[in-house]
Length: 91
View (tube, rainbow, N blue to C red):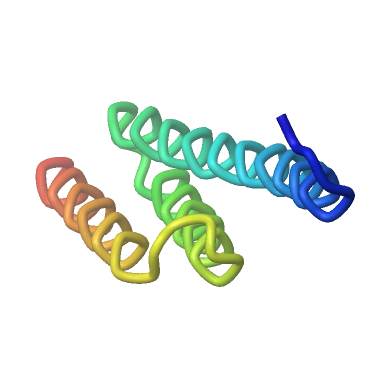
């Protein structure tokens, strides 16, 4: 429990940031899930768009500091590899 005014303010700020970060993380998870779903359908055009959207979402989260930039880069790399494998398997 916060004892001082400044600690109470810090607590309020932390709650706001936490809510914002949870929202961004959920958006990232949804974009990744959407990409993985499109990879199973073997539709190259849809999966390309989904990959672009997921990459954009992950980069946004990294720029806001919600996830680390290297973690974002690693996730994007893994998703791109999966998309390329799916594309090669579809041929």
